[in-house]
Amino acid sequence: MNAHRLSRCDNLSHYCGQPTYINFALNHQSCTIDFILASNITETSCFEILDPDINFSDHLPICVTATCDILPNRKSKETTNNALLPCQYFLRWDKADTSSYYYYTGHHIQPILQTLDNYIKNCETLLPDTIDNIYNDIISVLTTGANNFVPARQKNFYKFWWDEELTALKEAAIESNRLWKASGKPRQGFIFNKRQRCRAQYRKAIREAEKQRTTSYTNTLHEALLTKDGPTFWKCWRSKFEGRPNCTQVDGCTKPEVIADNFMHYFSKIYTPNSDSRTMSLYKEYMLQRQFAADDIIFDTELVSKVIYDLKGEKPQI
View: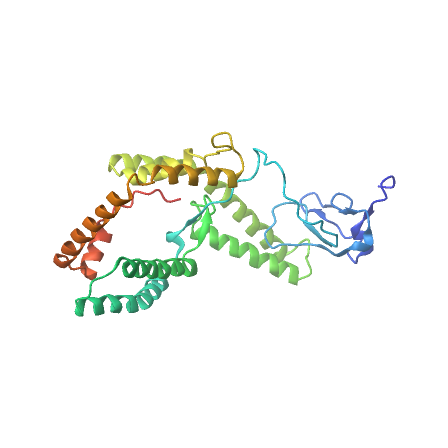
């Protein structure tokens, strides 16, 4: 510290001398184990020792705010293979507010449905642009509703083994710890014993639940095999045994911009029509058949509901 002219941040705050390591079982405490060093103590501020309600460690977390100059952003010339991939989020419908989502989408889709009814009553032909606009409006309503009422989380964000008992034990541990703090943090007595007992019960329940997750997977897989439920079986299998694919390069390229450009050029060449006249004739033939087909088919809410109900939800959910 002296050789590099470093200083402890807590020495210049009101936390100086307060312990950051506390072990009630051994009756030990220390302020020389956890600390933060700074080369310029004048550029640091707001040093504090945190005391969260749930902390199973004997060490208290410490926090300090520092002021520093940020250099202009410089784009790296080379992208390493160890670069972090963007996080992928999934809509967790099991944690969603489905009632609010139902009423929101129903309220905002009603005007779109009224527009379709007007086209049908007036016997107007739906042009492709009109169909695309209606489709985009429906997708916009569904997407906005999902953003408002359905949480998007990464894989394994939620603990599948968490239950109401663990929630109750956690709340009891937090409440007993707050009461202990309000009483001046005594080292003995009824309040101290209750705090230690609630923390021990909560910690033991977490450990037991974590040990049972393997058994839970095994039982779920076994039941899915007995009932021949393919989607449930593969959902459990993928979430347990399959990891995220790690693709570091495509065709020798590692930069995302170059890879995207290569995909664009490749597929644009594949789907280029050989003859413009033949393309136009096929388009006219398609529009003619589409016009005759649309006259014989009536789309109503009952038909759409039936089609959605018959869809198979075989996409694995995390």
